[in-house]
Length: 214
Length: 214
Image (cartoon, rainbow over all chains, first blue to last red; front, side):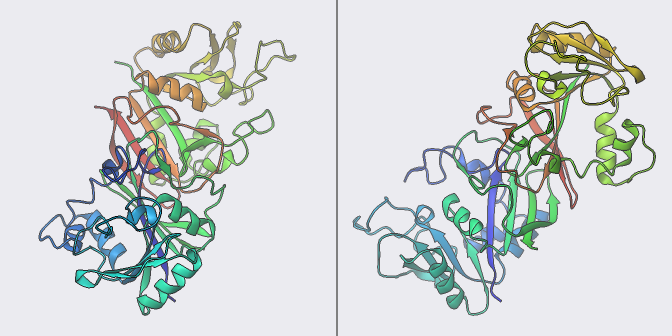
């Protein structure tokens, strides 16, 4: 069975993005501080077509988190562009340039229909207006037996968590405060909707908590 | 120099106590779930006059956290009793019975003066109405060169964190959600007021993050 897997970085105070997200600051003010630990890793660099990088304990975690993925689901907020219809000119193609680091079909949740967009390196963006379950079903079909990655933003991750549709979650906890922004677990109540912590790995920069279905 | 050291358990969503704290439910609804990991440990049992217990990695962490402490500062909410003056009959003596697990002088922040209370096992409760800095000064003096433990509740811990008065923090992160209650870092802004993460230890039940002054 193809799993839905969420990989996300969170601050000590529970934020996965900073406040005031915008075209200029897609992760919100201070949001980039959540991701500084990932940029030196060989596994991250390889996804972005870069050589070299650290082969640390975190690198093995990220390499595993990125293995066996055949599709990605993400929210409109993570794909970016202005809210509303897709009328911008030139058309918004995501934050990632001509060769995005997904290398498989990506399904973007949106209220506004749009024709698929095929970019280099095996990445296509497919726009789904029928809701989270339809997007997951399409992604599973496109993944051809591999797993599906759940991207952000926080609201999208929360919707899938609330619905009990997330099979695995890798939470990388960064020991900083953001003070405000988007909280991953806001409104989820007092349980993890079927997930439990099955493994932990602590490094000086980040602590990885791995969750799976009970 | 005598250090002020905070040792506290927190949920994934940032809560250190559940909602609806009361005399019947001092840690709030669900708050006890934050502490299940500590009860089997030999170091915790020894503080409460019990023999045996687990000698695990977490036990070593808690034994170290409890070593070299000469006094404790806590808030009225942690000491308990009804809010307001101390007129209850019989007088409130804390949650911990006749032989509390502190075994040193405890300084309780309150707006209502009260004569000191001396119990068995070396624990005394001293009531301080002059604010957090006065309480810390009195505790340091009483600690005679040893360190001072900072107890809760959340509001008290936040006040000392905000003032930059905490020298070490052991944050034991429990991989559960509480959904509501008291957040440790609420209103602290986007920095840890001089603290940085210096060590981490992950176990299946709990992840310990140790912070010290930069």
